[in-house]
Image (cartoon, rainbow, N blue to C red; front, top):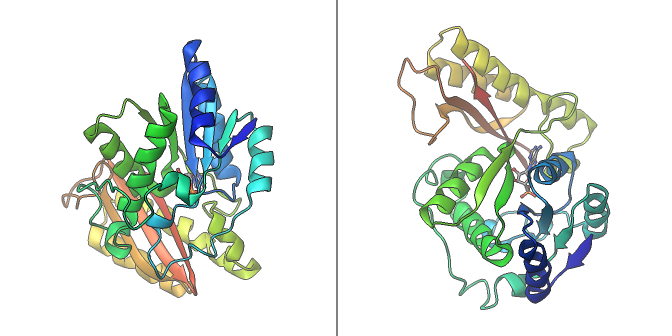
Length: 282
Ligand code: AMP
């Protein structure tokens, strides 16, 4: 595996493979990689010939009050893990490489659908930061496909929309959520949980499962949502939301809708904020 920090070198490596007819897959990440990220690499390996992973903690998707400066950075460990998984190139740019005119003057890509609710409502500007950096990565790598986790479900919808709307010739591939044995969705932020919080956090997945069961049993959506919020509070979490939405666009489902739904939770425990979701196969 080659680790590259410069755009010119990245382009040369990708162009050489493309020139011999190979397909190129991109896996964008912010690093501190875990088994969830590596499942994206595995998927890219299965689908394509040449796999590029990027590790970049993107400042523009963090609000001023968020954890950008203390986001865990473990580039050596990430490089070793990626090499082991058969990644071909690790693109490890610095902020000046990704934002040559500086963050304050950087061009932005704003998606107007799906971004004003849930994470978008709670984290203003977050998705513009995400779509802006992913658009740059698509232009720099020019992949045939890019792999994203269902863990960040709303992000996945935003990126699909951006890619289609701006005509990027990039197929968006999604990968199911990897979980700990107790159901907790893997996340770089889980390392801030102590042993008892980690146990307690299993309630998030359990609540999603209960929401699915209740919808299947025909219960009223609003009641299902308030029961879920109560269950999270009982376990010591402060929910930002525990909702059921249309899977395609996160719109409010009709009262009797039972198909194409997704349950989504964001819940806080002290300083930490966890998100998770479950597609409801009713
Ligand atoms: P991040 O480094 O948090 O920006 O995540 C990079 C990519 O990995 C995103 O597409 C995430 O959705 C995906 N990802 C993170 N955690 C998981 C997980 N537990 N299972 C599957 N994909 C994940």
